[in-house]
Amino acid sequence: MLGRIFTVGGYTLLSRLTGFARDIMLAAILGAGPVADAFFVALRLPNHFRAIFAEGAFNAAWVPAYAHVHGEKGEGAAHLFADRIFTLLLASQVVLLIVAWLFMPQAMSLLAPGFSEDAEQRRLAIELTRITFPYLLLITLVTLYGGMLNVMQRFASAAAASIFLNVAMMMTLAVAVWFPTAGHAAAWGVLISGFLQYFLLAGDLALHGGLPRFAPLKLDEDVRGFFKALGPATLGSMGTQVALFADTIIATFLPAGALSALYYADRLNQLPIGVIGIAIGTVLLPEMSKRITANDHDGAMKAQRRAFDFTLLFSVPFVAAFLTVPDEIMRALFARGAFSKADAIAAGGTLAAYAIGLIPFVLIRSAVATFYARKDTATPVRASLSGIAVNVALKVALMGSLAQIGLALATAVGVWTNLLLVLFFAVRRGFLVFDRAWLMSIGKFLLTGIILAAAFWLIARVSGSSLGAMRFHHEVTLVLLAVGGTIVYALAILVLFGRSWLLSLVRS
Image 1 (cartoon, rainbow, N blue to C red):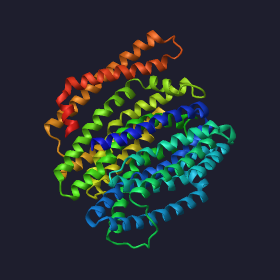
Image 2 (image 1 turned 90 degrees about the vertical axis):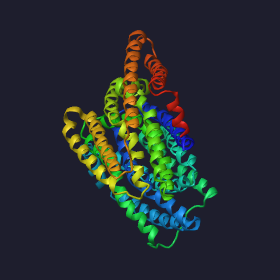
Image 3 (image 1 turned 60 degrees about the vertical axis):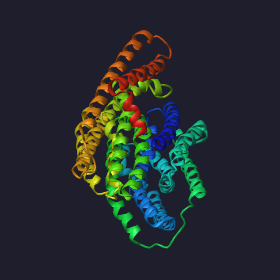
Image 4 (image 1 turned 120 degrees about the horizontal axis):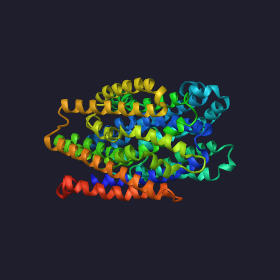
């Protein structure tokens, strides 16, 4: 399990690093103005649908269902099941794509109503979204193929696929002068990446399992069970995405640059979510599904506890950094070209607000795995809907005084509500036990985070006073924060947890 986590996490880290290179190009070329805001709406729309229906709901229902059919009925039945789901999935996505193309102006009025006051920005957003939307169809098929490969214990290609998004966008941005605007260049890069990701996953599956084919539609027991799980999973996956939808809608009414600040802050916040939270959750779900299918419920619970420990171990440094030195991080990474230091400060405040909810962001995927592995996609919906209600109410209350920072803060409070309710339901049903040893471990993680935050604050102050006149002092400060933080955190973990805890975590 640990090896698979590092496989997924390693490729995801490479994806995030190339993503930062992409975002540096975006910041320098697009900046944080009207064209940038139009592109980010065009990027967010298919990404929201992808997160809800593809990587979110579909993956949560598909992986346990496919694992169950594969384990209980054999490879032939699993292939037939995959063929039927593939046929339904492709048909529904083609219909959605046609509807989106035809009614994009109406959709834009709902999703970015603030653009209505600027006819040119609205026209540009509609044009760019029509370019990016077919990406959703391709990524949905990628999710189907990736779930099948994960059940076969093949994680590498699905984890590496998103690297193509960054590479394709950088290639089109490099020749942006050949496009009407840099926003058009970035949008075409998104679409091209969808084809590249599709061919990567399709090739891997064709070599090792066989691609799904069109099959006559038949609502047998397995297909009905899948759709029974898919409905609640869709509602459960909508929690975070509804919050981001609301961010997009509200931010279009805020001054120019608010959407861009949300984007760059979210991109940094997504680094630990993707490399840690999603990577561990991706490996944990098929692992727990296999164990529960074999009636090894104790083993499933131990796997989840181990996943929680790994998640906290790798996440605490990000929380400490994003809360303590967000401005230094933003200035070092993005403050160049069309992206000013004022833009970096705005994005830094937004990042700090997001960081308040980073722990539940990275834990939620592993937390809901105990329900999804049991084909219970309904219970997480109750928690998710409660989180949505808190989130949206706070957005409305905070947007006036705190602008986009208020939107990010509301998202953080909403995801905390979601996680705490999921854990409560899991404990009540006996799927999870908070014993004294684990509570002590959580307390130690909290203390290490406080120590590390103090170290970051001290390093930033010393660096600012002694290196302020240096030309690249923001970049040097970031390097010092990374090196110094690594040393302090390693020592704190060894002192508070001990070498034996680390060894037992790896070997368990």
